[in-house]
Length: 532
Ligand SMILES: [Zn+2]
Image (cartoon, rainbow, N blue to C red):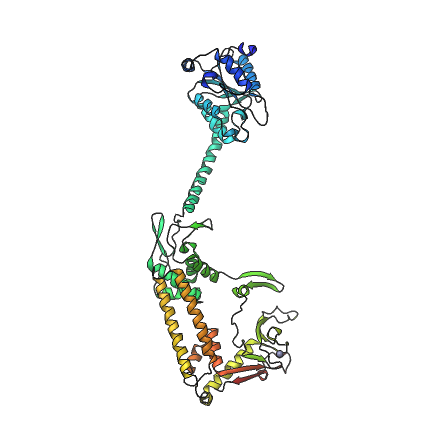
């Protein structure tokens, strides 16, 4: 103590507070001897304006845990040697703050304030990191020090750190940093906007911009809903676009609508009220949805390509059918209409790759009819489907040209039932159209109401269709054959199947007589016609 006092110090810390009233032994001892020098804060204020002082910044560091007392002593020794007679003010952080040492540092702030007031002539500390270890904050502090007239930092371990030259070097770095920070701030702003659900910069079809949000454009929203309805009903993008073009519907920016345009506006999350940031849905937008999320997801699923997985025989597409377990109707004569001529089991339709011929390119897989044990068969027969289908249809058209065949189809015991079913079906179709129109009108029907109604209609239609198909075809209810033949290429598989079933009871496939023949041998096929 005596030795330190001899260094000609002026102790100001007692009244400014950092060392007074401490629990620690070291602080109470310093506090005591300081008390004798200055008695009031008034004296201190006067001193501040009159005499610039040396600031000793003392802090316990985790890396080098020299005590505050040690640092105090070392600092005073240094000051006595370099600036004899210049007053000293101690800025000592209270205790060891560990991980939070950068956060809770009242003395650091007090020192910076003093530098700002240009009270500090020099600063001493054990090492630069004691004052500031965070490089970014160090740059900040260095600039403050230079503005406060302090160009050097005196340290015990690192000698004199030239603050001003560092600041110059650092300024360039800082400018570069500023540019990055600016970019970051812009990105942050975008992210914040996204998080708030503010409307993005790109205007989706179906909306117009209104400040920071989107307002629905009713005509465009109606188009979106109709297009969604059509996607779910199995329309292609091309035909939806064609229909929109014939009705002179323009795209969001007034361009021509193509299949790609339709796909783009239907798959935009914005139409389901979802906000996207950097390709990810980040939450709800601040605008109204045109399609509800489940409907929109269903539409997207329908539009997305099937997932391809690697199979033993090459890539394999996982369709919805694979996921639901239902394969649906893919082939004209399956479902019991074509049976095995050997074991009588219904045949299945499946893709088959013919064995490659050496020296020739591998062949594309083709659909085949198979007698297969999944339907109770024993693998008796197989035939290329196209050949069988073609033959059966040729025979059908030929048969229908004969008036005898139609006349012989016999009387109708089911006329009344059939009429009912037909009426119910056409009612269903108009109900469906009305439903679509209503759904396309904003506010008329909620999404879930629409979905429920649609699903119910679909189920009813399936039931009616199968009831109708189960009825034997009467002469009176026969469709217009000429028109059907004309419409055949545009008819759906289900419609074709329905038509074929009106006249064909069963098709029997026998074993091949000529093995390896390239031409389909129609002697293998026997058609059983309906009698009534
Ligand atoms: Zn068989």
